[in-house]
Image (cartoon, rainbow, N blue to C red; front, side):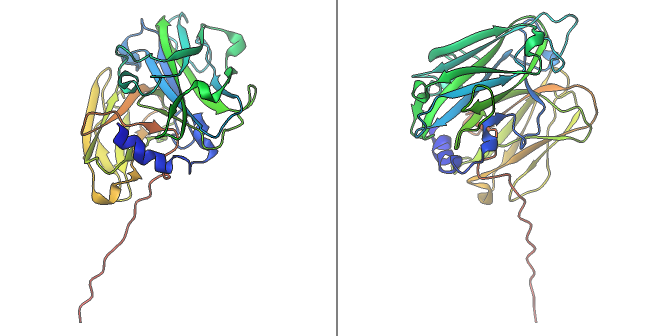
Length: 318
């Protein structure tokens, strides 16, 4: 994993303030989603736990806030299964092991995934007063996070767990200077290793995830769950355009492997998911490299959104 992070750290602080929203406008994803632990996985969540990491630059000394949009579980954005009956717990961790523990960087919640010092926790149920509203954790001292020289800052971990019920809680995150507004922190960022999310309903809308290809990667495998055959998936990079990728069916996993070309090293690859209907669709995505390490998915593509470099070579003879 250090191979990946070391390269990413070179590019991390060139990002714009959009990096402090998850999902970001670059991803074009409607909401993150976590279902209660009694939910059938066919609703679109394989393990009822979602982990995100927040990076606060080393130079930052002012208190920060991690804000959650619509944390309650019974509102207009949430996925209802019969009557709303779901509770979701959000827990913020810092300190030793919050990110450096290997279990924290896996795609499933294994022993040790919740290592770190608990800074704040709150369980949300259906609550009309928070429907479509922001709730803030903080103020947080940046030094309470786990320091990482590779990231050049302090890392905090937020775990959202569906502790009961069978509905889907749809929410968003922001990293901010303010308790009441999204005042973005320069050079901050948000990332995850596995994302459970709600696609936009509009047909032909395109969602994105952006794995970064560091120099030791020779292939990546995209894994997706419960896409309901309702997508076209394809991969675009600086070297190739619109390469088809495999799409999962209802309640099942699917995967496909993408071999890396020399021109793609130290760039971002764009994995696109193009909606084919207006139906509701919640799904899961993660990316593995050839070492079976989960690749971090940043809310903004490292180095910028990839653009296919189309060049025609013309050979002239006389």
